[in-house]
Length: 293
Ligand SMILES: [Fe+2]
Image 1 (cartoon, rainbow, N blue to C red):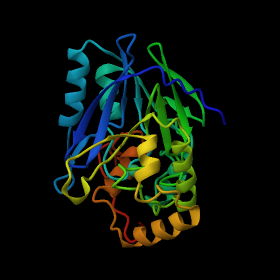
Image 2: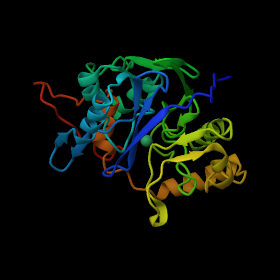
Image 3: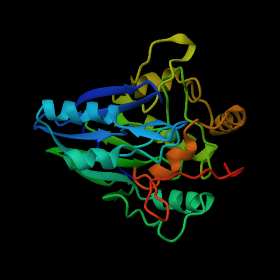
Image 4: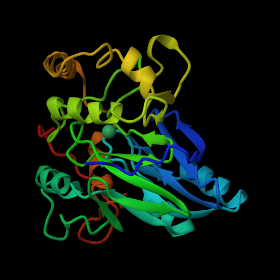
């Protein structure tokens, strides 16, 4: 696959760090128009109380309104397991199309079974406005973006490349954070390695924007690095680590990790494009499958 890279375009980025989930949400603006996209938004949940709020999303909405921007796209790099998407809430306020990788159907099939969903849960990706295939392009104003298929963390992961900036989702973390886990249902460490190599085959000077940062060893939160820095310093894949070395390391590490705190609500909401499921009477309601994850 040859991708339509255009690193001469430098989108204007505004990053919003969500402290509750260590997620970074981006507003990505076309430098030549007032059009923008949002990548990986967050809906707030107090899971213990079963309470959903929209403080994080409201901040994005306010910024977009204040700057007089037009929202073309609300992108999900994948079905997140650690936070809930606010995509439909934002779309209701600002418009824009919600896009995700077409392999969302695989994720919907897998977790539709885990949560024992009925036939009312469509497994065809129809909850989203656009389903991207590897190399598909789309426009943010005049600026062309494309999606790069990068499975491994999940089967539906895509990296979105917009001008000189690549939004890596859950593939790489900052060089001292390494890589995303590959042990969720449908994940695969070997595939993740190949996807990371695809990201690292982008031009050395391209900016890489993380979806998460946990500030390892007490350093301040960061989210931007470059392909060259990752190749040189990434603790999991840098210094020319082989696929076999990576699979061995990743598998052993993943066996030590506990499930993300919000995986159960996140999967149910995010596989529906950010909509909260409802019970037979139409009340918003979540399930907890026992001993399935
Ligand atoms: Fe993730």
